[in-house]
Length: 137
Image 1 (cartoon, rainbow, N blue to C red):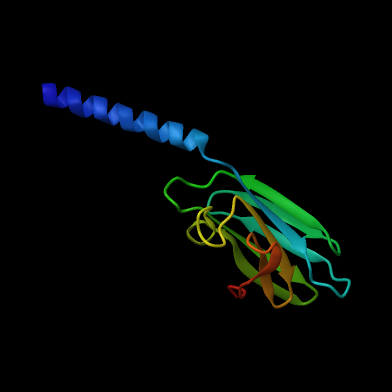
Image 2 (cartoon, one colour):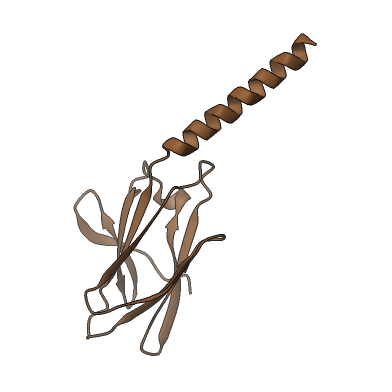
């Protein structure tokens, strides 16, 4: 019987710890800037597996942001479809394994310049948008 009590106390303690950890998790902000140039507007549709942030548009030089709490298990993923003119591409705008705070180019305030050849992330070391990645498609 003591073993059962011990397991129950341990289980309750773990639930309380996980709940405290989740409630203390720092929110992450993702900022998207239209850096297409040539007077082009940028259309976007961003979502995660369970959170559709909807459609929007950014004029030349415009910006938009969203905030969320990353998953404690490291599974948070937000992806966006970007479009302009006759082009359309998608990109994983926040991928927790790549972007978590303590990675080299990780962040809790993640800024991206959306360019024709792909998105470029703000480099927290030199404060330039020089961490450029290819489109997913």
